[in-house]
Length: 145
Image (cartoon, rainbow, N blue to C red; front, side, top):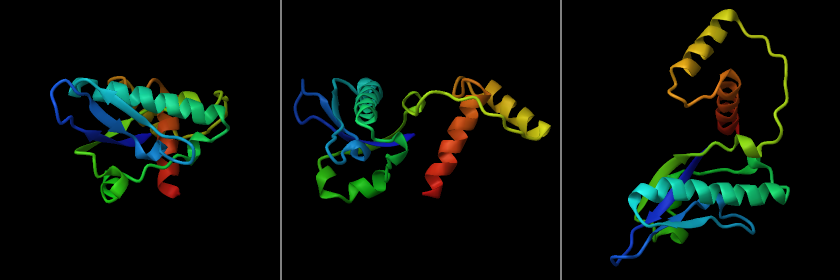
């Protein structure tokens, strides 16, 4: 899932960059973190997202209910005026979506070959055919709501 991450640059040397993930600042949750360098921003934001999502799931909140409105939307909100920059971070939430379940799906041979080729040449973006189909399904479902 794509998450908008707001970045606040430090005003003094020796201070950390502030990070916020507005899509996870809902109800009783908040997703903030810090990074000592720009190189750490992605890893620190990913870790913070995973921790908050894990907490949400343990409290019965469905991962499917998380909605990111995008940096353009969050830039307009006063709560995020402190953010100097924004990035989109793709975080795999499949581990929080429940236990894998085997299903029987019929697809044309040509489509299966296209999927397998995409997986093969994705440079690790997709673990296997099932992961590709799960990512494609989530993408399609996000656009439908």
